[in-house]
Amino acid sequence: MPTIIVNSSSPQTASPRTAVSLGRRRLLRVSGLGVLAVALSAAALARAPNTLGNVMILATGGTIAGSGATSTTTVGYTAATVGVDALLNSVPELKKVANVRGEQVFQIASENMNNDYWLKLAKRVNTLLAQDDVDGIVITHGTDTIEETAYFLDLVVKSRKPVVVVGAMRPSTAISADGPINLYNATLVAASEEAIGKGVLVVLNDQINAARDVTKSNTSTADTFRTPDLGMLGYVQGNKPYFYHLSARKNTVDTEFDIANLDTLPQVDIVYGYANMGRTPVDALVAAGVKGLVHAGVGDGSLANAVKPALIEARKKGVVIVRSSRVGSGIVARNGEANDDELDFVVSDTLNPQKARILLTLALTKTTDTKEIQRMFTTY
Ligand code: SIN
Image (tube, rainbow, N blue to C red; front, side):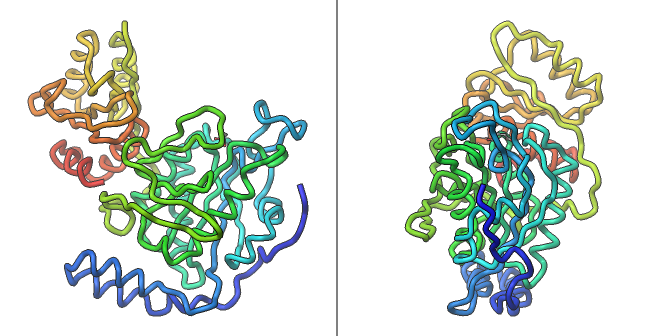
């Protein structure tokens, strides 16, 4: 890995775009003119001409920070071995698009992601984004759970400034490693005014996806990230982000979730639906004290006869049940494959099981009322 030093120390003078932002945004948000307010608040974050934005790069590990035994090792390498300074030094081009500083928040392979890491990361992101000398954030992350971290942040970040989560499918030591170009593109997006107010973004393979809807679709190829049916938001091409779509679901400053004073999150787990499934996994999780359960059902979230009584009993014990689907796209119909009104279950809308688990976890920090929780699933 090359060791060229870029400006990973302190940023240049604070960007003037944030100086006027907070007061004006507050006024605009109480005006009730939603779309206008968003547009104008983005304008309030606009930067003076010909200045680079200040982007913090928060490193958390993953393959983007991985290394293999040889340059052709693209499987069987070790994730999370390269530190943030080496990551930044390997892409000197970053300094052309932003004033970049790096911080190692933790160093893990993302299969080890958990609530404690999420709370630590989200609090750090919120602290940094509240500073006038930070215009955007890039988070380097393993791709295995990148979609989950991105959606968690989408629900709890309290700023319209850009937050971009990025990973790589090939380790940093591989021929044609995708990490450097992905990091460059992510930084470019995080420093751009176009990305303001668009929620947390996932940038890989020259594509920009929304945190809520993106998912990993292939175990090993570089084009693994997809937004099934709903479509990605845009591209990065020729040193510019191009946006074409926006998610209609609320995110960041428009959510009701606040993790500032939370040190733990409620335990929520997923049970997977399959032929010959029995009730043992549900019973075991309920006995372990789970507060919420997402059922990743077959088809439109169908419940097997052998499992349904266990879920009904779990609900009677106070566990909140969300019916999701293992299919990978589409809406789970309320009162479709089960009478949710009668069973007091919630449906996941289009959220895949791993994202439904995140929204249920955050919902349970606010309420156990299933009508309220169902409202949240049609809002976020
Ligand atoms: C990980 O998720 O940490 C390993 C796999 C990857 O980043 O692609």
